[in-house]
Length: 306
Image (cartoon, rainbow, N blue to C red):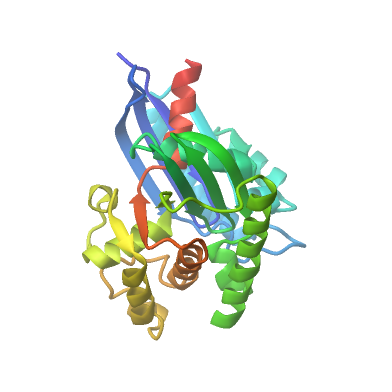
């Protein structure tokens, strides 16, 4: 009998809960999963940090999560907050609010830890032999991790997030320019770290809402099912066609496109641009979509600590 554990990923755009156990071979047995788009980073400002409305929305969801954790009799929990909370001047205050109202202890992690935990979670669901480049597009940042045979070689967090790009840049050219500048920073840093080129044999794996949404659009998924998108391979050509299709649509019109859920209709352009420019800059023609990532990585750390 394996102990039931819970992991919470509180991101800039969504909050996710996973309850499950891990067997002796590090295989995750999920019992319960819930995801809500809270837009915690919506209305973010350097001066004021997280907005009151965003905090209220997120606290309501975390109270629901706390109820599920109690209902399932979970004894071990690891809850982390990423870009929005770590960058907010009132991030510490929000962590206190979460504990007072839900009993959940929220751990604010850095970009490097986020990338390494995401890598661990991805390899619980996709085999990682050879060279792999993983990218995790979040609401406030994007983490890039280079690995060989499931061992991390390099990881870096960039100030590229779909919420911040969408709210902070008022035009597609402005978004594109920001993405270009951040990718040049990544390439220069990779070179300094001893990786001036990514091997042609390297596989690209993408996780989080953008890659899974793109897979859902290509597969015309009307009712989201993680099993249908996990492991799906997207071509750069297909992603370009999706981008051309959704670019002229209004956010409300995008909601009519199978695969786009409410809460992502305004963010999918920024996410698709990040994906396309990453593939173009590194020379990738294909992208493998992973449904697993940070949540699963967190669950594995709980099992290894028990």
